[in-house]
Length: 180
Image (cartoon, rainbow, N blue to C red; front, top):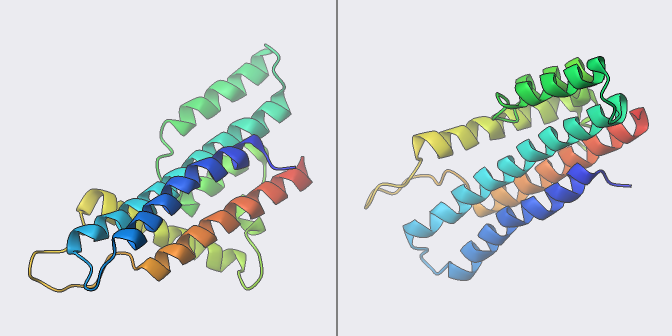
């Protein structure tokens, strides 16, 4: 059974899919450069959905461990997690792994394995996407007028990125379901 966090993610990732579908509908040959913003926004939204998934999934798992009781230890753990999540911001491996280790005692990144993907490669890919998202969101990788340049995100890359992010969610949910 999927977690509540996974169901929320399924809804949130649809924004990224909708943006790429809008790009496809607006795309003409040659594509107007201003349409590229839709692909960049789609990647930002996809990683925002993943960030929210990790946050919600941690909260959900900690609630399962602590229960909903008012005991001091349970309340301390929930409050500590809430405080740590205020500083989470980017779902890179070096931010995800320590939170899952601290609150659940598991290196969740070791469960990121599927088909031809091994955990080390998944960690590297997530870090690469988190960096790309940061560059897009904070460095405005916007094309210059009249200057041809490589697109920050290609349509095919974006579809692969969204598939990868979905697989991370599936692998994370499955690992936590087995552990719980």
